[in-house]
Length: 437
Length: 161
Image 1 (cartoon, chains in turn green, cyan):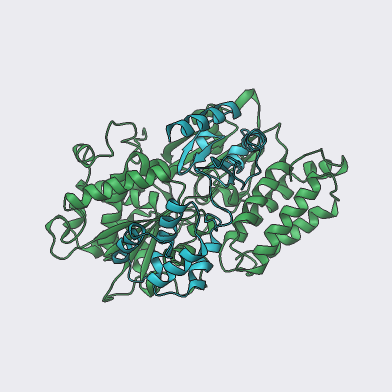
Image 2: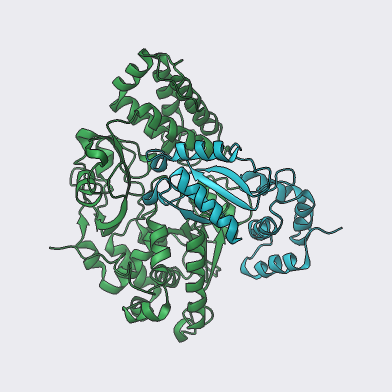
């Protein structure tokens, strides 16, 4: 069966950012369908579809919605996580820039399902074009009665949507960090429970969903849960915790490929397929040495692991943290993994919010040790030291509040397991001279 | 002497109905001030706090968490230029672009050229990895760019403003 893209189906259509053009192409039909159902029925459809969150954790979207307290007097908030900051990830930017009404339609349907009356789109500051495109779409939607009081004439459905710009902090993509930031505070993630669905923004029940997840909701309502489930990969019978990987996914391909791009494909394509069939192959006729499967926090696939299916289950089978954001970064065989790992560690050290000591100190020390190795002053024992730090920070060992440190630790663990010989070789030859820190 | 103009206050007040708490307006207010003044002076922190019924320390606390905001000793130049140094850009020359621009402009990341035109910064992933290496001028990302193309773009941006 040939795959028909839906999330990117309007890409490149002239003026599709305008409401009128979006509607001509079938836009807001899904919303009308949803409004003929009860909110609980909409939740059920999304649950039945098996849609899992596209932001990185892969939590089932419909299940998350059912965590909201029943018969809550309100207000209930919907926070749209548009803080996309994971290195290598740009799929949400493309959705918002190129088809803002598709995202907005998903927001309106999801607000209806969750009985949210206000939705905040928390948008990273760097997405200036998205900000202006989304704001125009929101303004148009208000003008057309799709937002505000009595959405599409429904006396029982009111919704306000506001854009809220961030200020350059990766941690705001963590859902409780996002909520703290929205509330005007430093973005320190909260201890859970309570989960946001019980007590979130402004101490009210809150659902936080990723942009692509909400865009998927639009199509699930339009085409049905069965359609969504006909795409992707069913649960692995050998893994009782796997919930399946259904639906289309936007894969980002960057780094050492001939054609860096964002493509929509069924969940479960392999890294090799992405590189060869969509990224134009590894650049300069070289080979891939390592591939990041889903944003740098997920770790690395080695060359021999490139046939791993990139679904929610696949990357964990080869020791990666997960699918993450499905942002694939290709590293060619001329690149030093020491440089790559230093770059990853420096990122997390810069972006650690500083709340939990193991993360604040651990990410900094890993960066310093790698800088020392790069200066040619590394020792073989540094590698065990790096692993010891990496194994001690994060939710996995239970030493931090949020998963940032797990994401910082995983590239270190993977690199020092899968590419250890290269690190040892580097240290033995006293590294190479680098003039930068 | 008040540092927030009436126009700035009006913009800040317009955010209040969007949120159930006044504190939620801190980030929007800081953006309003920095957009206008190219920094957030301490006096503006005090006045924002007063507008939002907060203690100045609460506003300062938020401000200092986000490396984005500048105090009055470190105001931004007319254009803020961020060069991405994260992995996707690094693999395609992002660190070289940052180093070369730094050398050609004669400033370190974080500093402003003596003529007050350009503040150079390093950025972590700008989310435009298909155009690596990329840089951002104010809030628009451009790429892929060589050092020469970047300097040309900065020159054009300077002339246009």
